[in-house]
Image 1 (cartoon, rainbow, N blue to C red):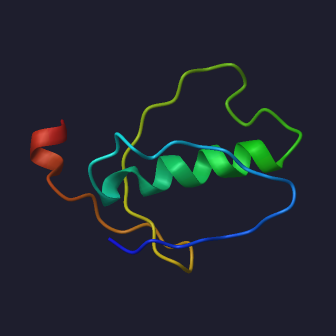
Image 2: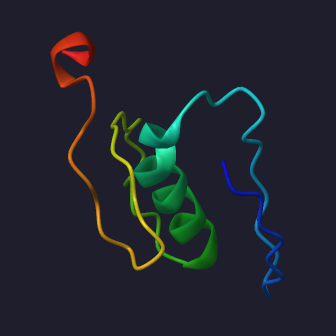
Length: 69
């Protein structure tokens, strides 16, 4: 795991304390994007997903997909 300190404006808040792996990266990225835009990208729906995302924004293959399904 790589810890990074990032300063952005406007401020973004999320708690990753109970997240146990890289597969939450895509959903965390979508939450950050949702906080930075005025549009509600979920349209009021609850969204579930999985996927690792790299520093360039590419989504990797889903590890352990047979267990997640």
